[in-house]
Length: 70
Image (tube, rainbow, N blue to C red; front, side, top):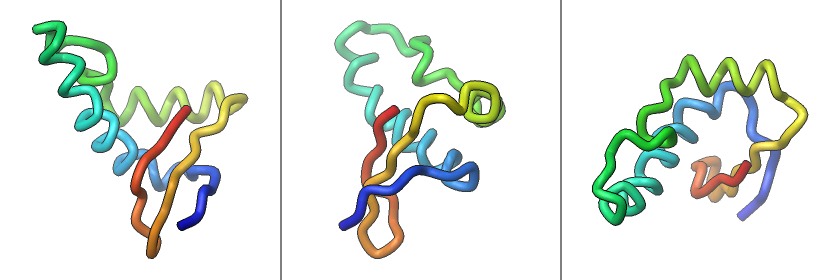
């Protein structure tokens, strides 16, 4: 396994994982309109390009993204 800096092309997969990760939070809150669940790919791409001061990391195994953290 490797931890690497995510690139623009990873964002769709990262967004899918984000939505899966926040489903349990939404269930607890009984609110499925929380930002991580309603964020669009365009919004994430714009954030990535505009605020590229932070780093999105990806954990990969055999080139598959396993997890991420901003």
